[in-house]
Image 1 (spheres, one colour):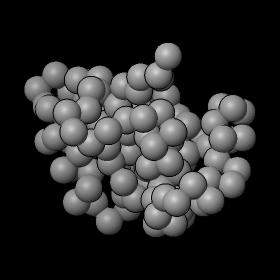
Image 2 (cartoon, rainbow, N blue to C red):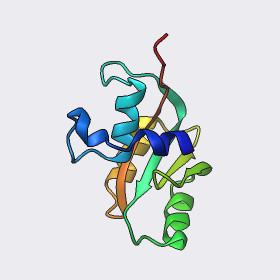
Image 3 (spheres, helix red, strand yellow):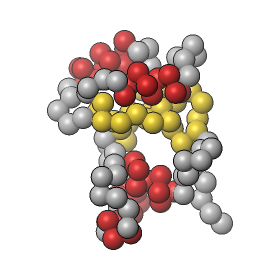
Image 4 (cartoon, rainbow, N blue to C red):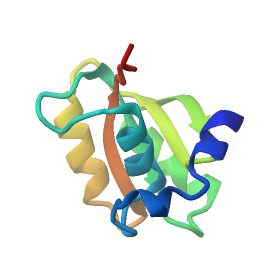
Length: 114
């Protein structure tokens, strides 16, 4: 995680939109493209808005029957394992409709260039 934190210093000088989230910057650095991206089929990444309590986050996650795989403190994001009966696009849509959610995206697989 420390490496990721160092990478973002001065990123605004790279000509990327200032409206991008930290995760958008990470995808840009890793070279993840929007056309036919690869992602883990049973995981999503969700960031909640500032001020949403841990209790409320647990309540939402329990209601949607997901399990926390990892928490990225630097990104303020949760990696969530979705139920077998759901698809990544379905779960992203469910989270995006919630007012507490900052963003919800697939858990993209980045490929580093040689």
